[in-house]
Image 1 (cartoon, one colour):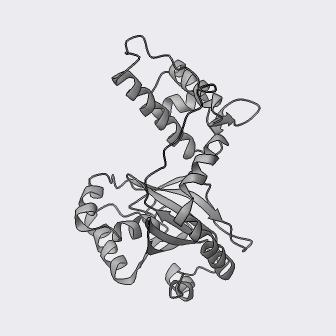
Image 2 (image 1 turned 60 degrees about the vertical axis):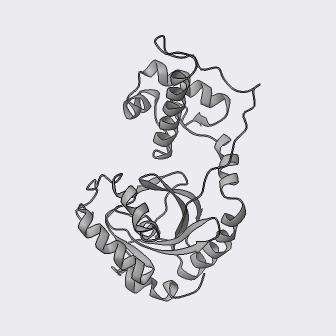
Image 3 (image 1 turned 120 degrees about the horizontal axis):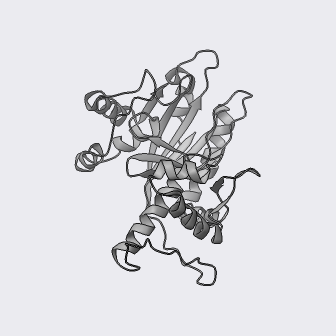
Length: 268
């Protein structure tokens, strides 16, 4: 089960003794617009690595973010100094490192810590994996997880992102927004067809958002991954919007509605 949340990230201090100096491109100023571009590029690299938890080579990162390999190398060196990336394998490549754990823990502090006991209880009662996630522009991102107990279960890694339009968590987050907020989010959705069941029109997505507003739950019926269904339920708390998302592997061919109806009705 997954729990998405909307909250502002905390301020992060930088250790000047460990921070790497990143050289700007020859045609970029060291200050102003050049610095903004560097931050944007580092953020792009972190997002790409979050979507590839097993890691990527420098060439693979360069292709994904559309930057020269030499530029990626300098940025990776800086991230390595902060332990934001580590070696993925002995043969090369990098993945997200433990330096980001402290940041993630700060994001998960306060009200968010209230969710973990509820997640653990839902995982124990349902046998399914429960995840916590946050809204990030046009996607939801996993930030915590309680593994299920079934031998056959679906699980994603912390840091992985799912589209709003295909995931049950994304739909129930959108259902919790006002119409004005939803209008802003709509402009960001690309409606990429991931499986044969993925929603590709705003009309159908909005219909499901309206259904989620009435029922307080939303479903992913093999729209993100073939063979896996999920359901999310939103709980509004001080500091953000929360959701519980049970993943359902194709065990017994059950629908998410029938499989999780006892848990959806239970109070968190």
